[in-house]
Amino acid sequence: MAHAPFYIHLTTDPLDVGAAFAFLQSPAAGGIDLFVGTTRRWTGEEETARLVYDAYVPMAEREMRRLAEDAAARWPLEGVYLVHRLGEVPPAEASVIVGVASAHRAEAFAACRYLIDTLKKAVPIWKREVYADGREEWVEGATPVPEGDDRRA
Amino acid sequence: MAHAPFYIHLTTDPLDVGAAFAFLQSPAAGGIDLFVGTTRRWTGEEETARLVYDAYVPMAEREMRRLAEDAAARWPLEGVYLVHRLGEVPPAEASVIVGVASAHRAEAFAACRYLIDTLKKAVPIWKREVYADGREEWVEGATPVPEGDDRRA
Amino acid sequence: MAAEDARVTVLLFSVLSDRVGQRVLNVSLPAGATGGSLLDTLAEEYPALAAYRAVIRLAVNAEYASEDVPLAAGDEVALITPVSGG
Amino acid sequence: MAAEDARVTVLLFSVLSDRVGQRVLNVSLPAGATGGSLLDTLAEEYPALAAYRAVIRLAVNAEYASEDVPLAAGDEVALITPVSGG
Image (cartoon, rainbow over all chains, first blue to last red):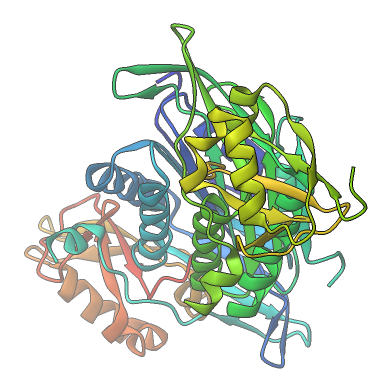
């Protein structure tokens, strides 16, 4: 492979979906699936002004790398791109990009879905909702499941 | 919605994944799934020099629009982006981008998978493999299933 | 050409256009012609098409159609072999 | 500080750092301390933490750990409330 198969990063900068695709491009890949989580303005009647993300950065990066390794052990992957934004993320902007390259699309879809689902359960990142009326609250999340436990399940 | 919800296009130009994401960004979306089909150099021991795509362009665009409408009727979507490249596509370059925005990720993944699977069965586009040794052949594809038949199934 | 004849445009793609060496055929049909009778006529004239007859689906004016579809003057009939986009 | 005491660094994030008003606590532990006994100590000192005790998972030196994990001087202990990334 021309470049390293994993790209794992946390950043306060805006995310770049084109760069994610460029990283995953490979002559061994036939299908690349990119999931991008974005800040949604409305949840029912609640208006979100922005999300603000906090993380335990070195552990989050380590857990993200472990997720990538785990996905690559489960499916034949040609590359994994996992980037999460920290700090403020306004509506319509990306908070997370999960990208997977594989020879065939079924594996790309399955691994991508697995990675975003597991990232939301296992990686020490937290979001705070800041509402348009000024209220703020930390989102009640998932009790963290170490990815290692998942593997034994 | 700030822009039209569907973008349907056939082009001989290289595809732009960043532009696909930008089109799909919306304050109503929480999850965007982008599937990108790329030319794979190796299939077993066969080396592909490039793929060459032919299409019945006006019908292909009409069928792609119908697929987008069908997906939007099945899932609550905030946008659909369907672009297929025609002519020569070298290894690692994108031949198709299927992008879907939805409030939640489950719907984005499901609709994206449905769209690429159905596009491959129903849309009058054909690929020719040009091998590194100079042989060429049209890929034996799926007997086209009109999307309307799918709907009744 | 008899007054009842109808001229239709037949579009070929992919392997069919390669085998026949053309992408467009102009065909004159008798009154009452259908998609199926057009395919029969073409299979006689172009043996290369006969081999694909079983897997060809018809589209008339850019919509999939069954072989019993009646054809009218000016129709654009596409011969769709198994597709392989993506 | 007794010779047996061990100093560990406790990291707080998200709702815990908001409630306590700090992101880092330096805590001195007696010999034989575990993750669980550290949580007990902290819950007494910081009532805001007590309310979350049931949902906190521990990480020691950036790896998830159970409450019976023994702690040593210099360990970095993170208190992980239910995560909500993505």
